[in-house]
Length: 185
Image 1 (cartoon, rainbow, N blue to C red):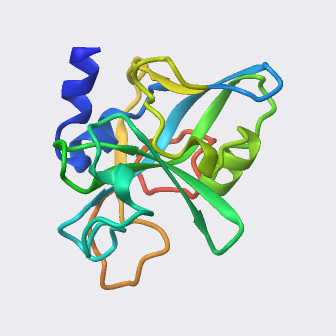
Image 2: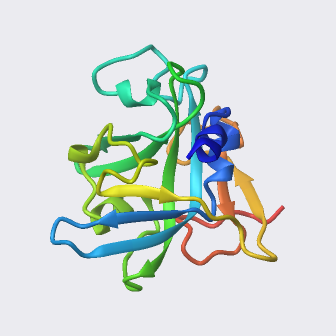
């Protein structure tokens, strides 16, 4: 676990990129196990206005300030949950949004967007602030990496104003499960 913690304790741009290829495992409430492969992420850091932690710690964003590897689950537009993994240094407001994943088992899951991913995996605020590294919760991460021949492409984050030109969105190039196409670099 120490090696995984070190990877996620880096700046969120590095951690979000590093998460590509990792498995996200969810033990569903009815006991079924869902396994998927992370194929798209976005980085968020307290130093920039697109981040929920920009104005400091609140009851809502507190998991972003926890040790790397905790779930930060929030509701957007009053109807969609989004799953983030806290990253960066302990006490630093930072996270990586899991934008999309490739279904491994069961194969038919729709995971090509943060809202679809959470809906398909039954992720809601009940999982907020759970530790995704120690395996003691119903959602956790397993470190894998990119497959032979895969490479990462970057783009601006989705849903932020045009003046946000940070290239903090990462995807596995050509993967059919990403939420929106990214030009290959």
